[in-house]
Image (tube, rainbow, N blue to C red; front, side, top):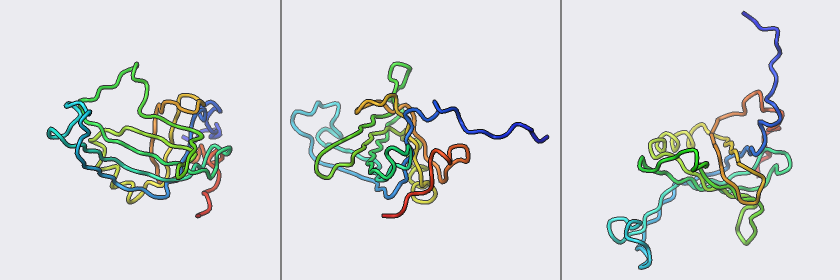
Length: 169
């Protein structure tokens, strides 16, 4: 049964702390090396190795308009089932604004992804995902990420906020 109620966009507060990123490139990074002698044993892989893997993503902010077109780099680290989250942990990553220094993006994020979602995430990044939304806890220069998601397109109810696609570099 059709509704007489028009479709409307979300309340303005829905966009508080939200960033939309157009993904330009990504890479599956892997680092293996010898652990530093000062590294605690529990953080060493197989007794003496340092092992790090994750998704290294580069893009540009599409929304909000105040930061449109600015570069962002994102590191996504997988975690295993031993990691536990609760109301006190309060985040799935960190978000950094106004980073300075040679070779740095003005925005950076470090995010955590369940290891069980890694394979599907890599497949979708390589095929359909073009956008990423990140929700932050505050407008501070360094803040918590409370949620993130990927999508192939802009949903109709946030199209006005997102604006048109960015021009290629």
